[in-house]
Length: 146
Image (tube, rainbow, N blue to C red; front, side, top):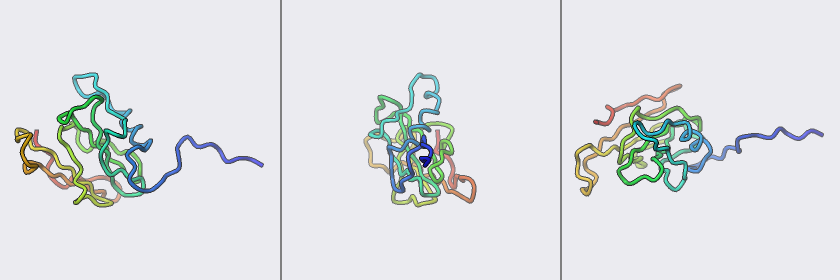
C-alpha cells in the first residue's frame, strides 16, 4: 500500500493566522527597504493584519527587523492565501489595518498623514480601500500622500 505523497506545505486552516508560512514566504521575497540593508521581519509577534487563507482578500502588515513605531510597513495582500504583492509600491510608517471597515473581500488600510502630530489622536489618517473584484485587486481610494 502506497502512502500519500508528503506535502511541502502544511494543510490550510481557515481563520486569522499571522504566523502562516504564506506570510513568511512573501516577506522573505521582498527586497530590503530601499537605500538600506533592512530585511522585513517574519516574526509573527511583529506582524499585524487579518490574513486568512479562506477569504477573497486579506492583508499582513510587516515591518523591518528591529523596527520602531515609525518604521516602514509593507502591506502584503493575499487572495485565498495566495500572495499577490504589496498594496503600494512604497512602504509607509504608521500603517494600520482598519478592522472595523475591512470585510472578506475588502481591506481598509489607514495611513498616518505625513506631517501630522505623532502624539495626537488618530484624526490625521488617510483611509484607502482595496477590494477583490473577480480576478484582481482594485484600489478604491486615492493612494496615501507622500
